[in-house]
Image (cartoon, rainbow, N blue to C red; front, side, top):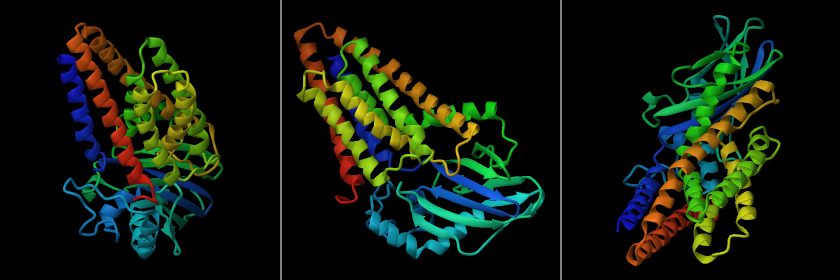
Length: 376
């Protein structure tokens, strides 16, 4: 009965972890800078739910919107847009107050007329214009969503810039809150973007469940290699073009479909014993997941060698995390299958596998309904 106990524990972990995903512990901010001389334009994308917690946006932190676990209820896009319009000045003041630009020791001044909107990705986009001294290297310091705000544990800020003829990208965090344009070290940036990519996959429960659903349907190492390769190639195809804006699909379309892909693959393991169609399906869903990965690392401004290297490093981090999950989960599944040498154990393993697939499919369907703007 040990195989059944193992899988039952796995299912329990899924159900316990699913609500916890809504509790925001880390977030990514994207910042694009463009300018020449004394004028610098900044475009900042922040996660709506984190901002909602911090500023108490209407329709999000109402009396019935927060569950016992502290999770923010899913709110339709139009409600979010109206709420954001009503709090545009407060949003602009918060972001502008936490984003500081300077040349030399002289600070830049944020001009009036900041633009606040809900982007297609679902993020809150704040566009700011700064008046800066005409000479000196531009330094950027971001303290958006500090841990002391009480709504987030960790924030990483992806900065891309095209300022004074210099192009590049860097990653800011609590240990590195500022950067001077043109003084970034590509070799030191690569490991940080690899880590960011790995964290994005490991802490994205939907992507992890998709991988586990694929593994539940794999019988041989060859099956694992084929589906992992198809998924890797597919999400790599869409990640970079989507991150730099060459491909744009709204988040309210991508995120529900990613959730639906989890349910489909999990149920397909139960309903379709033949797997001849599996690779085309995995490739198609991989394209969707690549768009989802890109949502965490969008780039504003022209593509540069530094930016491309960072995006590739981010993708490498995703692949390393994916391989780690496969290296742990698939041998465990093989062990369970080989350990089920008696009819009772084999029956228990079958029931446990069915239970795990149903649990994963159920989580995918719940997320689909939560994320769909027409069904929420």
